[in-house]
Length: 496
Image (cartoon, rainbow, N blue to C red; front, side, top):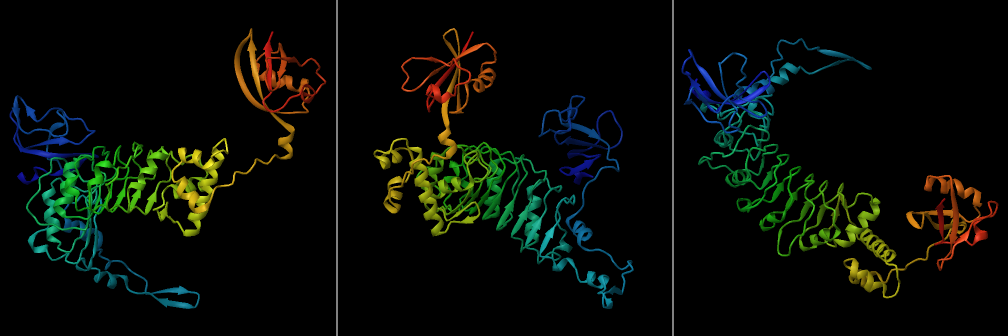
């Protein structure tokens, strides 16, 4: 039973790792000194009756002793898991020889004969997720998976990275490896095995330190590294990732991606779902090879931060949907802003930016910027002080036309006024409200009553230009136009 040390197990729904096998002072028989995985609480730190049997890594009180009972699930070997998933015995099943079709009986193939040819040696993708797999292959079984190039071992019982290295060495054609959600805890021990992969996934692995994640990518020489859903916040000192081309860090707690700017080979960066990533501030002379960036579902809120993406010279594909930056904006308005601000982006949020669309979006952007400027004198200069690329776009598309607002029939009947509640010369509130010019004074009273929350008040009006002269609305049957109401008029509700 000594080989149980370091093994992962489950019992009655709880998980843990064996730290000690042997006798315990003052008792009879063999005990397992185990450390429960969080959140299962233990009883001690591996010390019993002042004697230390093992030490705990998860917490000082996660240790316990249990008997090696039959309820413990120790997992299974990789070969056994592959047989149970892929080699099904169909010889005992009575398959029909024919079935009734619309044109008579149709013969069907013998599934039990087909199953005989589905051997493990033919597998190219070996998927053994959640199969309680641990350990390595025996020497007699080394040739079984000779054709496997994709090995999926997520959510299993691997506790030692040396096991992983040996398994990959036993399958020489493996180029994609998924070890997500395995009970791997830092610090990891690395062997001397020469492993070369194209892609390594260690998602949902919060107990592996960032330095060990970088070392995993370095020792496997993987060009693609996925480490998402791991509550990762610190991504500093990524020197061992210098060879990585694709880096996926989705749904972590990353606040700053600038430490990754030193990676000379990085072409694709996925940081979607990092809601704490708010400020980008990409500096010049960083992210030299980056062409694809996914910022969707992040916390980006600032347009000037987006403008710094222009410092990434080779960036041509960007995803930035579902961020506070574009929340509340019309889809086309948000796309126009992004297309116009980022001239190098050729694919935005999964859609290719054509030349015609870019022209339309840039013109829409110019018109939007022009409408936001209150005065039309020196329009271009005033726009350029606030918005980027104005001079460049004006040179290409010309000065945008600022249309005069078109008044509808209803607009001509409305007066945009301010209802001001006053009590003893103290202004309590100001409420902007459009009023129909033909509204009678008695029709205005219920509106004023709701705003002032009183039934006893007087109504006065002051029309622009305001000279502190107030006219009493003294005739209930008169319309507001009789008292000269217009845009900018102030109607005072004076409490009695």
